Length: 135
Image 1 (tube, helix red, strand yellow):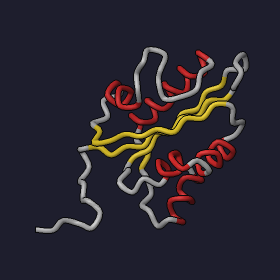
Image 2 (cartoon, one colour; image 1 turned 180 degrees about the vertical axis):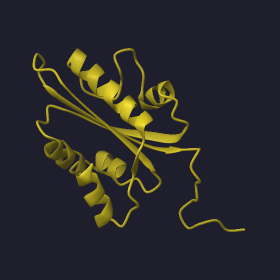
Image 3 (tube, rainbow, N blue to C red; image 1 turned 90 degrees about the vertical axis):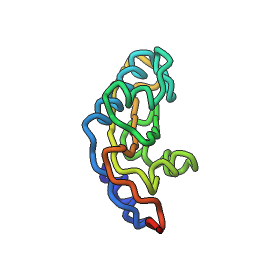
Image 4 (cartoon, helix red, strand yellow; image 1 turned 45 degrees about the vertical axis):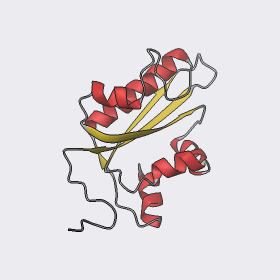
């Protein structure tokens, strides 16, 4: 989380608030990936990030997700995301407000370590488009 905060500070972006629902969604997906020795955004039952947000009752306007398999530490996983344009874009989403992080291990799989970060904005939160509101 601190690496994400530093990256967002460098870009003068607001800090994200941890949302326990997104933490549960991220952790569940990390555990699902580890159990199956898989990587990616699709769960073992075919669910996607928005489906997992629904399962934890996160009332999303949008959700986005970064996953990593095989990175031994959070720092290595985060560096890989920052080196990948689509993952970097997720880390630096201007309109994101919340974040949840999950991690799981399975030493019996090819990847061993599984990282998931879920970003979101809830319709419970006030939303002001970039540039503000104009009458």
